Length: 136
Length: 136
Image (cartoon, rainbow over all chains, first blue to last red; front, top):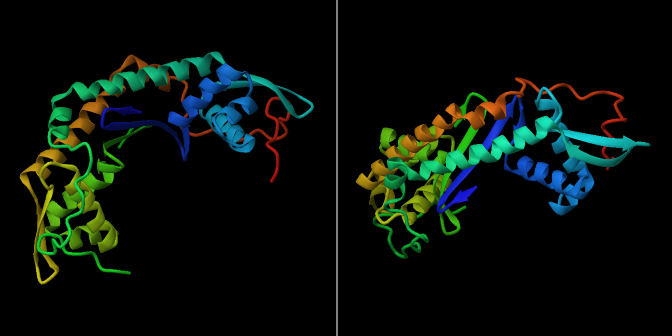
């Protein structure tokens, strides 16, 4: 999430897995919109395998699955968010919004007071104050 | 920054560069402690070249350099934080602390209400609800 020059990333950890994060939130939204894991992955430009693994990772990190899959004959027949899935998605987006408010803090003002829009170009021949890194 | 199960990452963008972030904040602290870019990199397990590039990236993103280098004969003779460097480092740490307070929000409570400590193991033979991803 980018708010002006501030990039904010919120993730939920569950053991060695990530239960939620920006990509997983986007995936939940796409599943909600598309009604299928496969279609959601396609919209987001991910392989079905990767999409499925992300859904499985989320599902196993919460007390109730976030995504319910309708399956038959070993194939996906559609998917939708569970009540828990909707709660988690909405709470994640709300937490992002709450977090974005830190840009109103005095600390943020001090942090960005001297920040430039673009980096200055490297000085040429400034060996006095900036020793060149060793070549390799 | 990890606060319970919440992982928070704050970065400052400057064009295509990152002006500040968790690694750069650690680097500023190490330079302040060690009094040298080389020694700071060593403490953090980075090559001198990478350390120097990170310092240069920060320096070029702010109106005043964050790190002043004492150099002579093309070699680093020590480095220290400028006034701006100290301001930016302190403001970044303070912004992290302010941001950490979002764990007191209602959105955060709803987000983690169903979160497990560890992911449930994958179900075996559950082809009905979880179609196996295609092998490759």
